[in-house]
Length: 65
Image: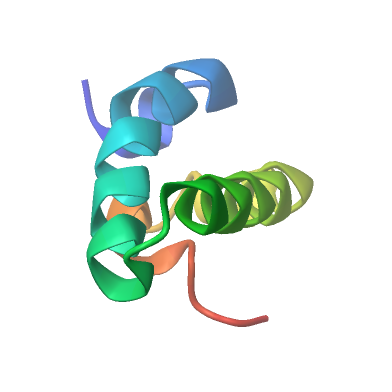
């Protein structure tokens, strides 16, 4: 199943932990990494109709609006 066929919940489950790990590598602070990941996911959810059609949404949804 492609990312565009996934619902937001499936996308979240597939991407959240990897996002937190990546952000932890950048911040060296697990709490900060989780907060940033939650914010990124909230923004992705708000824009889900656009995000779900991106070829590689997992790599691009954390980009600033």
